[in-house]
Image (cartoon, helix red, strand yellow):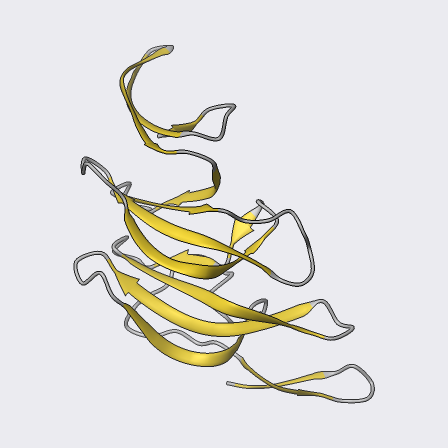
Amino acid sequence: LYVDSDSDLYYAKIAALSTSDDKKIASDVDYMKLSENGSYLYYMKDCSDNIYPPNSGTLYCYKVGEDESKKVGSDVGCFYTLYGHFQIGMDGSTVYYLKDIETIADVYFSYGTLYSWTYSEGESVKISSDVMERSLSSALLSGVINSKGFTYQKYSSIDSDQNIHVDL
């Protein structure tokens, strides 16, 4: 898998210093992430270059060897074209993502609605609302997510000293 200078995503066989059987998967890819098992590639398109208000794009999943990608969801949070607000489950076929991102005024933190999506089912499932994007105890930014359970923080309020209050 590779992205060329035009932001087009390809699947190809690699031998020594060349590729063969190059197959174009998508155009104008902003960000991508491969599952640890190498079977699923998640990528985002249509992320804007603005920092605020929070940006969103469309998340897709390509299963290696398949003909076409599946659309996971729209309005998925992204930061520029640097990363998407999603993490891949341990099996690779499930992705967890935030959409409907809201920014907490004056403090550079955001929260959104947490969803899961599994390749075989093809439908997104809402897990919770008001989930902190950058919470330190959150598996959403710490790596691969174990679908049997993980901890995340929910935004509760902000006080006059700019301290954010969360619930686990």
